Length: 248
Length: 319
Image 1 (cartoon, rainbow over the protein chains, first blue to last red):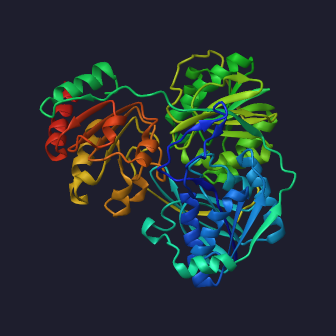
Image 2 (cartoon, one colour):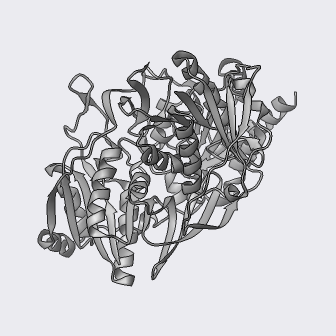
Image 3 (cartoon, one colour):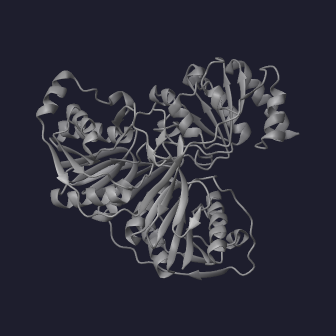
């Protein structure tokens, strides 16, 4: 089985978010980059399948050379090889087109991408890959089992879980649940050393075209100070919620 | 040209977001001078949509669509959009709508912006404000396709009545292409309000000390007709299912009122709940970061404050 895990290189969850160039670009200065958490849940699940089903796990990102340390980390976690499609994409549609073009050549059985990235929160890349390749698609995926050519998966829905079955090839929008936080693999020294020898191939971008562009960024307006209410004066809180905030 | 919304229903009733989409779609339709159409799937009574300014309802009623699958519902929305020459399609931020949106985008070769929080800044080019970096920022995006999809953040525009006296209703059919994907079963709590649809969300953190104390959260939620949620450590420790985890890697919350009990307010948690309109925190630690993000706060022991709050709220509700 051939598995592709699509990786987004994103700012660490604790990063302070700032913008430069007249608020038109994200300020990467001093920001620590990580594997997008939803992608990492998917990667860990893929590594389990590599161990159980001898699957070959490939990781891929669409981005410039600055993303390579993130791909090396994926190799240290256990991926067999890595691709970097060399471009700075403008939007998620362009990312999906690049990945789909690559997948047409490589014929993966299973394609895993985080249900959304924690930077742009587009939540479109896995679905668009599935749409472009006409593959089955399960997003918000919280469990996945593959036997032969057959997959069963669970999707988190509003207020519950939906269980589905389908044939491969399949695209998964990964999230927590696929594996738990405690299952995430921290690369050991041996993994890090091996990762240096594993193939990381840079491939040129195709002629994909974006369908949107970001004009500017802004931060939320600063918030007023909290109104503190004495623990013995709950009536005041209820009064404020009713008469001032008008939410109860 | 037309504006098409997909008006979602559940158990024969429109979801609240259907009315929000109609209200939002109406405002764009007025700006652009194009009709507002609503697609419904397996919904008999669609009269309610007239209250929010829908010009025409296109009903697709077919047993083939009895069960939601992303592929089939995306096909319905794409087909109706194509047949009606839609240039803007508006979808909600429900789990199902976010599932079909990218498929519709591919099928129509459309631009797509999710998490949109306001009416367009301009219609040509379609320029939209959306949240990003998990609510730590917004970006203004310009969609440059002939057909574009707006994924509207729940509870960001609100419901605005706009009675239309002459709403038309037609039936349409869409042929379903084959797929090997089958829904085996759905495990859903019946009669409980979901985090996505709730006006009020009550959330518990490590300050509650253990899962056995969750009756405090549940009782408070019941009093307010609220959904229950939890912080990441609580879900990681298995005190609560991860479907309740809200924050950066969990579910987003955009309720009118968010009450956090014993949640310290890590930056990832605050990001996920930031689009809630009013935030209340109860925490024993006055230094908890949540106090910087909240509108109202009580420094106190949850085990003393919450039972009092429940009692007083019950009295308030029955008065």
